[in-house]
Length: 165
Image (tube, rainbow, N blue to C red):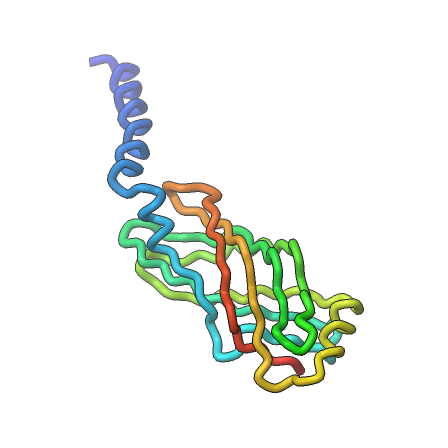
């Protein structure tokens, strides 16, 4: 047989393998196998007195997929609001590029850190009750795997324990 013919056959088979994999393990099943929760006892930390002032968000990714490793490409905080007397909205439409990788059937934590502006510090300082503070988080998390690229997970977490210091 001609070597060129064999290379073409191998090329065609290589084109069909991802199609076959997608038929066996659909995108919907893959996305169901990825869970995002809060990762720490205080999943949101506001450090007003640090230089610069920062906000840290701990998220936990649970990859239940038996077939695919996962990479968190980008986290977009659509809205973060602190449930206090005035319910200040701290962040809207803020992106953070991560590139964190998780193996199949694994659990891991992700730390997302943002600098706080003076306006955000002012809003946090207006909170009178700093004990037992909770927050609500709406985020979009873009994940990738060897089979599915730039898939979007919408996350809504309520009553997240928040520490302000």
